[in-house]
Length: 158
Image (tube, one colour):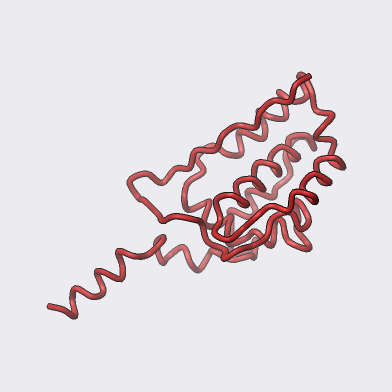
């Protein structure tokens, strides 16, 4: 009886299903979530807002990850973020927000595994903005409540 109970207790301690592990890589060929989060959007402004939200999500929700604020601010300056106002902001925010519908723990786990691809020294979205950490999300997988709530970006004054 002890032998049967041991595997069950080990299974209960997993952070997420083991089947995810093979696709939780820094390779966009295997990790479809990296392809989704790094694809081109309709406007560069929407890409800027999407990249900002992704970096905030990865830096805050991935174990051991952090945001390099100096490099992040430099990205925002060079991308034209501070010039986004009015209808341009509204349109870009709408497009960027649509990328975050139905984000669940599985997509977060795959995002955390691919931080280096998206935000590392040769990052396809932002260079050296988010440190990779452990490549896993904080917390554990709850199949009863898998979706992640992501707050919208605040609209700048002006």
